[in-house]
Image 1 (cartoon, rainbow, N blue to C red):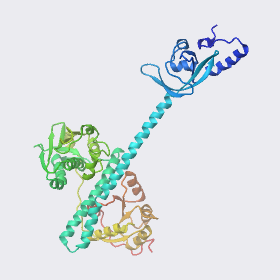
Image 2: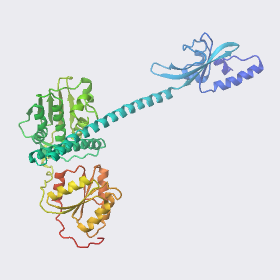
Image 3: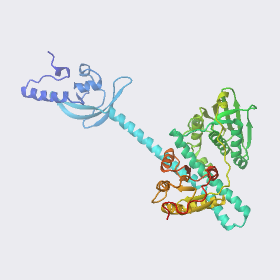
Image 4: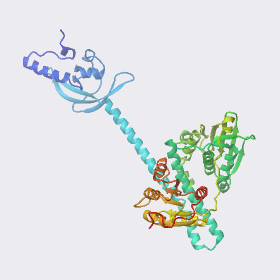
Length: 514
């Protein structure tokens, strides 16, 4: 019977003691998980253990006597590639020590397969690099966000200072008021864009579809961007289908998309440029194209232009403003309308074109559509309204606005004060900030709801948080409405108008009054 040791290049020793020693050695190295080779100084392989044959993917008989093609130097620890086939290469860590084999000097090389470890290290290194890039992009974005939020503050402070110096000039005050309102709306728009991106990526945005004509959306968008057009001195050419084209869509969201495309075309085109808006329609789809002869898009950027926080040119973006999320938001809004939004450009300095396609609904869809929600005009019915907000300036100014609308209003700045004032004032409506110190708005709302003699009380939450989870929490606490700061004052006026009739005189001493 063949001795297994012969197959691995070990010859039986003549001396019984030496033979016993070598037997112990063979038992250790042949069961070793690392591949072990014994190589003559000239590179000829004298011995391989079973682990080495598996690692090298060749039988011992083919390896013994062959030249080992990897340079080995005693005392070295190196990583070596072991090609198993044309498509597979394993990586091994090789350690080399000097030894003797059958009375001759030799080198013993141990090979430890580290392929899986190297793969994990490479994956970890790649992940670290990705995190570093993401962290850098986050820092850049936060700096950009701070820049964009600070920008409107300068004209607001300037306007306030001018009104303080020239408060008797009615025309100047009106102009400065318009500046403040415009800049506040700008800041609110930045925040809304951030929230919209979050809602879309989490699948929580809801469309309010209704039948709307294409011309209505286009005309509203043009009116929105007209001040930008006039400021830059651009020419706008519009071409719409002669026929009446009706879309089944959320008009506000489509206007948001078109506003973004037109605003970008205006911003990134030098003064006196040409902006073209063209729409075509066939039985299957509607196509809107926004072209400009502006700075264009580098060819390598065209595919990435819709990426979150991507901007064509950082220096230009700084001067023009924006967070780099508008096109991401626009494409996603079009996508959830079952449409597409693509970009085209022949390169820098050659202008750009954005193409939006939307499916055209069948006539039956439009005919069966529910009517749009009714609009409400502010009514003149005075109400008793309690404003609760720990931000004194915000609360007092809101209280003044409500009084100017013709309502009776009182203002408090904490939860306990609100409950005390409620029992004295008996309001119809409570506008209640949720983020109050100590006793928060949820606790105040639950306390007020416990006043069982006031079933008609309307509680309106005021908060900087507008997620679905935040709205759910406010409903559970007893709020009827959930308004996100900064408040849309027109919307608040309409809200007060459409509430139920005022209760009239309140009882002089309701339960729980002080």
